[in-house]
Image (cartoon, rainbow, N blue to C red):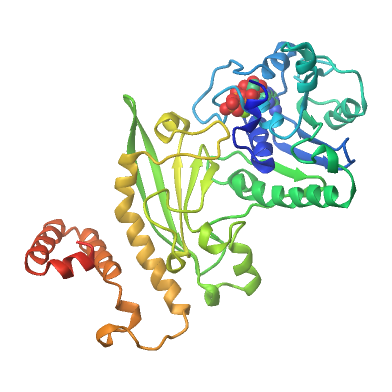
Length: 410
Ligand SMILES: Nc1ncnc2c1ncn2[C@@H]1O[C@H](COP(=O)(O)OP(=O)(O)OP(=O)(O)O)[C@@H](O)[C@H]1O
Ligand SMILES: [Mg+2]
């Protein structure tokens, strides 16, 4: 079971992010990730100044399916994250934690090699090795928690753990991690809205927030916000939508700013929905099954916010990396997303190089796409409240010119 639980879909960055969720839940104001390269002895420390854990808390934290109460907005949910995220990267995880009532930190370790050797679920108290000593230093005398990852077999495969290749891989992961955390926790880093502000450091670099919506750019436009009610069992929860059109390349403050705004997956794949669970970004890029990614709509990005009361409706996975939009919400998002994409398409075309007029019937290529025109007409009718007119036009066209109706998408 332990071996199979290593493969539930974390990569290095998302595994670290899951531990930072724990730090946020524990009320930390500062989190620090230290990545030390030392061949096979390489290790990662994730350190916070949160409330820490009691003696039993540390042991409980290493149990699969740890028990505790979760409040609304709590980033934890399954009682699995610490173990599954840590063991997905290495064979040994150590928790060093001190609550405000304790003088000495509690230290416990889960080591897959020990478990394999004794064929038993053994949590050990490790000797004061260099990792433990370093963790104590990081805690100084204060409450907080340090999680240590060692035997990093998934990061540095045993045969190649030393040397230039391994070092480059380690350094590459560090850079990826920075980008990932700056995005996933951007609201916490900048203390936006109801997110409590935290500092996140990777080694000696303090991360700055990467805003997917580039709201500091003067030409970024926001359409009106919308809210939807979604049912989860007998309970109803609110989902909030905010829509943004980012400036086209020429309208950006600088070429560098435009490149930076493109994000880790680059412009095309970063378009679409940014889904936040209790202020933490859990999914980004793409339209959540409501439409396809398209070069013409790459300037469109929208945030969707839900709170933990809707976890079951959104089917949040253990790694907090993926959700599924509830079908009822998908339907309600159709119109506002179409609107956004039409306007983003316009913004994109302002920049597009002029093309020769080679479309059928002398129509310019800009207006040769029936589905787009149809969508624009539909969106306009819906926005002006002319629902009956929409139905009437659609019926008439279908009857009198089915071909045209089809090409317009009616
Ligand atoms: N940094 C931390 N500071 C204080 N307590 C922690 C910290 N990390 C973990 N814990 C405690 O250990 C428990 C287990 O953590 P774990 O991440 O495995 O599960 P979870 O956060 O409850 O749920 P999820 O599986 O959704 O992450 C937590 O519920 C919390 O009580
Ligand atoms: Mg957790």
